[in-house]
Image (tube, rainbow, N blue to C red; front, side):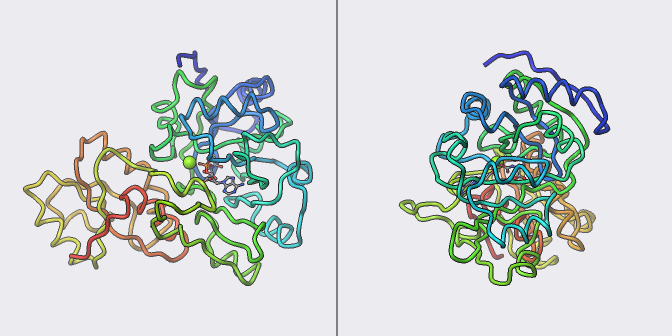
Length: 343
Ligand code: TXA
Ligand code: MG
C-alpha cells in the first residue's frame, strides 16, 4: 500500500482540521484518531466498503470484529436491536468513557464490522477531539486500535505514523492517550454480564453498578488451541515487541536481585521508576508501583521502546491485578506469550 497520508496536528476540539478528517471519513476514507484509551483507526461503520479498508490497513484477520464509536446516546438504537436496563445503567455510569458494550446488532450493520457475529460492540469515547470528529462526521465510526496487527497499541500519534503512514488517508495527531490501555469490553448478550477484555473501567466499578459480573477465563488464561474465543481478539498473539518479554513474579528486592544476575546477558528490565537506582542492567521505566494507572499509561510506549533499543530479552515487573492493573496484566501476558517466572 502506498497512499499519501495527510498528517494533521490539532490541540482543540474547535480546530478546523477536524472538519477535514470528518469529510474524509464521510467519503469512505480512513483516519487514525486520538481517543482517551489508545489511538483508533476509524472509518464509516455503516459502510462495508469503508470498514474493509481498516482490515487492509492494519493487516487485521477478518474474523476479528470492530468497535463502533458514537458521540450521542441517541445513536445507540440504530446500531443495536435491544437496549436492556443493564445497558442503560452502564451508559449512564461510564459513557462517555473507556467502556465498550456488546449487544445484539441491527441487521443493517455490515457483516464485516462484526466479523459475521450477530452482536456488535459499541463505545462512546470521552476524548474531546474524538467526540467532535464523530459529531462532525455525523456517522458512527468503526475503529480498532491504530496499530499494525500484532504490534503494541498506539498511545501517541508518533506510533500511528510508525505503523500507518502510507496506509491510511489521514492521521489526526493530538496528545498522548491518557489511559494507555484499551477500553473494557463487556458483553450483555450472555445471561450474566461478562467482561471479555479488562480495560479503563475496572471490574470493581462494573460490579458496583450491575451486581454480578463474570470475567471471561481468557482474560488471564491461555486459550486452548481448539477453544472458541468469546472475544476473537483474545486469541491472537498481541502487543508483542520483537524482544521476548518475561514476566517476573517477585517482590521488589527479589526482582532487583534477579535482573541484576542477568547483567551478562544483554537483558533489559521493564521496571518501576523507584527500582532504577538499584538495577545495573538497562531499564525501560513503566510507571510506579504506587499507582497501577501509571503502568497502564506507560506500557505500550515502553514495549515499543524495547524494540527501538534493540532489546532481545526484557524482564517485566508483574503488575497487581486489581483495578486497571488487571488490564495491564492481561496485555503483558499476551506480550509475554504467558511466560512468567518466579525466581
Ligand atoms: O479503547 C478501545 O477499545 C480502542 C479505541 C480505539 O476505542 N479500540 C480497540 O479496538 O481496542 P480493537 O479492535 O483493537 O479491540 C476490539 C476488541 C477485540 O478484542 C474484538 O475481538 C472485540 O473487541 N469485539 C468487538 N466486537 C465484538 C463482538 N461482537 N463480540 C465479541 N468481541 C468483540
Ligand atoms: Mg487492538
